[in-house]
Image (cartoon, rainbow, N blue to C red):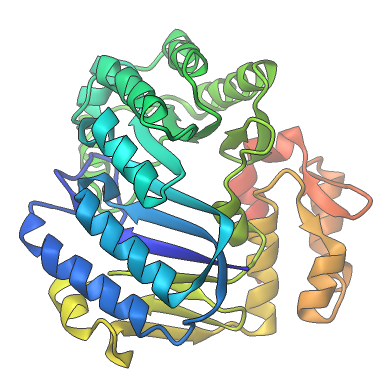
Length: 373
């Protein structure tokens, strides 16, 4: 079945490291934006398709009112065939989440919340320009749970300037003490054009050495495995049956439809990108003009994308699926690359394909780049 992505670009303010299409100080557009979003959904050429995942991402979707979330959910239900067991996720920040809001979300049909906590350390949170404290982060998880949503994911970061191994372990200790079933744990990446990139470029912020960050990542994997979290994707950990069904669609090269400013869609053959300008999006939503880019994914590009994405998951490349998608074996497409990466200890055969080794996890970006032709 298809997955739906709903982009909510509003933030109270932009974080230091963020390069996502999100904007602070534009709440004046919120009502018109939700109306435009519903208009785009109702006029979708994919209306009537069966859907089993919905993901409200951002930005900060928890800045929407419950009435606005309800409007979007009703429009989705009227336009698509939502499976009874659909996974419906809403991203939230601790400062815009409380028990009443969580209970309202549950009543509307949201059954999974992903909290952008990043750290439980107040010093680190201030550095990242987050608006919550460690204590508020802990409370937000409890509020979601007590509001009736038990499928809770948390985002955490390591590799921060000045962060020690003990700090990372403290964050994980806080995490595992909470009623949480999923974690996305990322190493800090300095993205071009972000405020963080400017500070690093001027020498105002010093990043930890790569070897230290790699060691922290290994420690994260060990601790979460010891606490019953399966490492199913390069940055994702879940208790049994709680892997992100929506994100798995991206990694397994399955179709998804995106709505909202800058939203991406993939129907199995074409990729589409919506306008990245909010006023232009509001004006064009529901018409063909909302699409800013359209690209046909031909075989070579598709093969590259599939391998790049599939290797993010611990199950790795599925040779049978590769052949069904592209009409040739993965060995005929990438034989020399596979042989070299296997010889160097970065990937290993699984019987049904290939997956990253522990060494390959450490150097994932290099491995992925080898599949670009």
